[in-house]
Length: 409
Image (cartoon, rainbow, N blue to C red; front, top):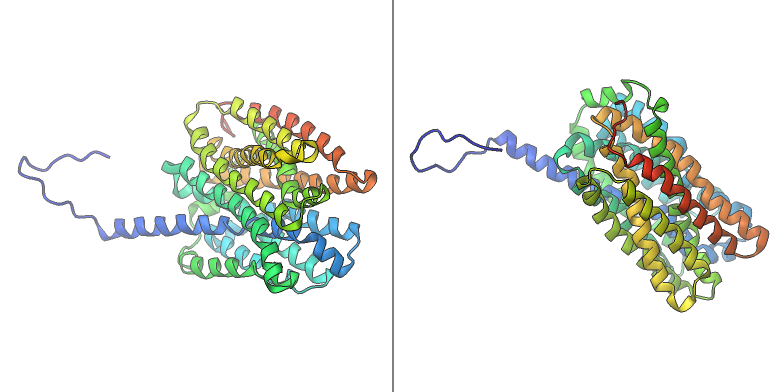
């Protein structure tokens, strides 16, 4: 922004209007809240898998029910996604996110109650809350941080990856410290509840605005080829992403690594995901086309996941880092495409709803297929082949969606 001097005399210290100061403070608080919300959007997945052997040993839950608990919350992400735009239209984006975060906190608390019914109900509630938030966070970035799309996309996708790392790395130590897997799971309701309390004053002050009312206005994105390419890219990356959260720790333990070390390897891989997710969006925002970046990262992710299953065990940390770089960048690129391939927040909300409905609906099949293949063969080797195929397949819509075009023309 340039300023025209009022005179040739020595400039006085400019006076910043109070409204502008309040606006800057509000934007900063909103940015902090977006990051903290992101830090709670994956613990439900990675915390459960970190103590899965202890849960099954204590409860005797059969394998079929375990599959429900690992696949159910991912499926709910897709089922809940279409509800986000109409809820935002009725109550406002911030208030809808606040309600969804409260639902997430309640679900995490109930999940730690103990029996299968409580775990199922809690994971369903948590998955539904996350599904709504997933759709609306990119809309907030598009609406309020248009001039910092790459930075804010990197921050909140990095926070999402960090959430998975926290769940994977801290849940097993919590179990060892408390002697209770119920407490270890229920603990994750605390940070979610804290974010609800922090975000509530900001969310309740904001009334539904024109952007909220436009969430469902405009042409249907379901008839857009580009929107389908973005959604397909999201679906294939989600098949790998949620399989990491649900199955990487059991895969490593099946290969002979103890529970604590397996949790640290998974957490280490996800910490590297954070780095990838921080760096990929700003890089993507600077590129005219993201086609080759999307394709290369998809191939890297599929290869990294396969190598954690059949690669030499002494190099497991290398495979974990390889997977982390790929998966973190892949998730961030898929989410960043929402803001890079739309011209306004209303279209971004509709594309986000479609992408996450299709993406997580189909993506939930990844964790299910791993469970089916393992139950049928007694080995995770077929899953390695599956991930190689998924990574290769993801490169195709990733390349197409990366071309410089916009949904709606």
